[in-house]
Image (cartoon, rainbow, N blue to C red; front, top):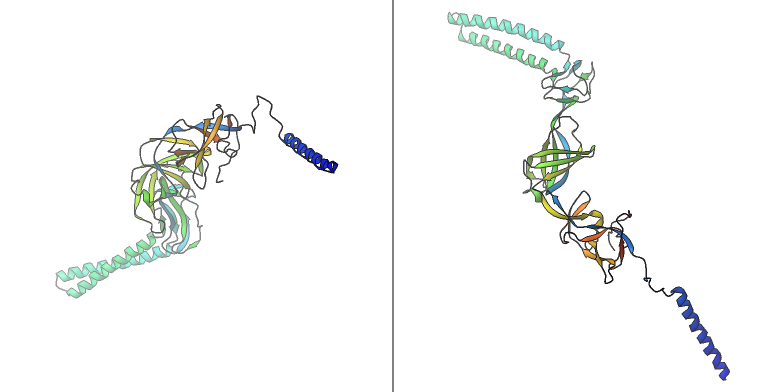
Length: 366
């Protein structure tokens, strides 16, 4: 009977010994002098720095010609002459197109003949009235006929003049849309005419900025169509009302455009400068982790052994410019993690290597 009890005890000892051996196989003892756990995370560091930023209002808008129109005809007619080339600059009052006016000129000559006859009859009636040979009513009729024929002559001259299409202002002509011999109806577009220097940029701002924007303030423009160039102008007009649908204020600025590179319709990023430059504290955009419950950074500190570690710290952010973010609750010179945030947790050790380019992503939540 004692032999039967010995077998289970022996088996139990073997099981315990196997378990202990398996545990040490999974977790071998560390050699003395070497730290335990994972190696420090490699990160790049930066500091909170002070910069001079001018207060600005950001918006987007479109360039608009100071004068721009589709030149058209007021009367029907056949194109008899085109006096401009597509794309050329034109002056105010320059002839662009002439319509055939031969019938109108003939009608004008007939009216002039009637005017001459009515003038002779009027002068004769005037002389006879002085001699008391004719009545006052006959004199009045002759005078009215003379006035009517003069008016008809002026009317016909105006009809002929309307068949000469002139440039309403100086500018650059676009591509002509008519050909010789083409019949045009009143209102048919002939060519686009745009005055390009100076040029406007129209944009909108939220109504809460109404008290911050004024005429005469400087604006700076960036254009997708002309990358790498900056353009300067001044606020020249504000709409007196606020759009009730969007609650925005329409603003217009004027820019010089001597080379004609700026064209109506271009998309523009607009900065309105509303004050003098002021000192602000900033960090690179990549140093900020954006979280649903608040934004934070990893501040670099040291533990009891002097090893660099990180501490997750909430941060208040503001405007973003050129890849940097304005902050307000960290002192100047505070060292924070610039890249390598994805693998970090509060309190873990880190190794700073600013030469390493780390592929990092902005944390959007945890």
